[in-house]
Length: 590
Ligand SMILES: Nc1ncnc2c1ncn2[C@@H]1O[C@H](COP(=O)(O)OP(=O)(O)OP(=O)(O)O)[C@@H](O)[C@H]1O
Image (cartoon, rainbow, N blue to C red):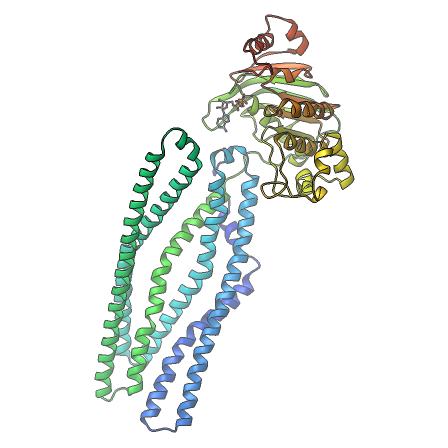
């Protein structure tokens, strides 16, 4: 199981991935941000100049100059906002793409025991959802909140410098407005959250019902499904109405707060103007500054949620980066060439629950031999093969392949020399060449690939493909039957020339004709290699030299296949008899 007991500097790693090498761009963004936050302060100053000079009867051309400057400042502000938006979004995406890559690589490095406990959906949410929340935070929150805070600070300083009494009044107003907005945000946000949850529940239910539509129809569950759908919909509608009422209420209250602020600033300005302390232009200036604080205050208040989501996402990504693979790639040895011996020395294994599913297994398999592994469902066959591929490490004992403890072998060498074929063949939405070479992981020229497909009996299939090796496979490409997919999986194994091959139920889903083709391919594949074959169809074990019978994680029988077949009292002979007694012509072990 992945553990976090070793202190792992994931936070520094996370920040490093996001910021390292980007310091100059970040500094540039800071400068742009300060400039774009200062520009809105200039507008009211120009308006004041315009009003005061107009009141003094200055020429129209002079006033037009001020108006042109006002226009220039407004346009410059807009242009700078676009530049800041672009730079910050670009930086945020470049930085978070690096993080996405890091998180995805880390998740792929984590071993099977981690992936058993975390669904693909959860990992997608970590690599995409949480990182996108961080990206939004970096592009919008940083810019909007930092920009808004700078503008707000600028307004307060400028107004204080204009008139300290009005400055103090403005400070008090900003404080009250911020508290009011905060209070109403606390009222509106939970309602918006409920609405999102209701929406997720509604779509989750729709998806589930559509996926199970056949079962629902066949079992007469349609009316029940519609009733549940109506309930989810009713909940969603109620939640939506509440959320939208809360948003509207908040909007009205905000407008009211700033209307009161505007009136107060006009009243204070008028009094000071009448007392001769300030000019008419300054009255207008104060009024404009009062409205200018509205946007920054609203932005800061609104962005709180983005910040909360980003902080939560940051913590979850950090937690994922804290997970350590239990299977560490710190071996230095490489597996020898040729067929590989297999030794299990007192091997026990337990999954998360802590209960052993393999108990002190001892096994010796000579190079080039084929071992048939049989046992009822849940006896531990797949777990044993996972240990041979080092997808898991034994809880106790040692697994030796080619006389080397697998923990001392480089994983790359292990993946090269030990191959696994299961019944779940994964074909990718890529062309035939990439599907065979696993995107170039196994090097082979096109002639070798075609020769291999011919050897495996896929020649006819291959020649019918419209673009040869460039033909796309997968949902949008050429169709592949289960048998053909199996053969493609065998071809992948041949490209690596492994010394040990593990076949886990590799032929169990095929029709007799495909199985025959695959049986021939297996004969070729196992020639000159050590193999461990797990098969529920005992009939397919004819090529095994030895048989091991597993029962509840223990080897209860091990011997030469023929000798076990000939010994009526052996468990294997018993299993064969049971299988044929169950009238299953294919000898499936039930
Ligand atoms: N990822 C897992 N987490 C926890 N327990 C597991 C896990 N995988 C298997 N087990 C348990 O380990 C035991 C052995 O399972 P394993 O899959 O190795 O058996 P098997 O002989 O291959 O079965 P089958 O023939 O059905 O594939 C079972 O009790 C199973 O429930």
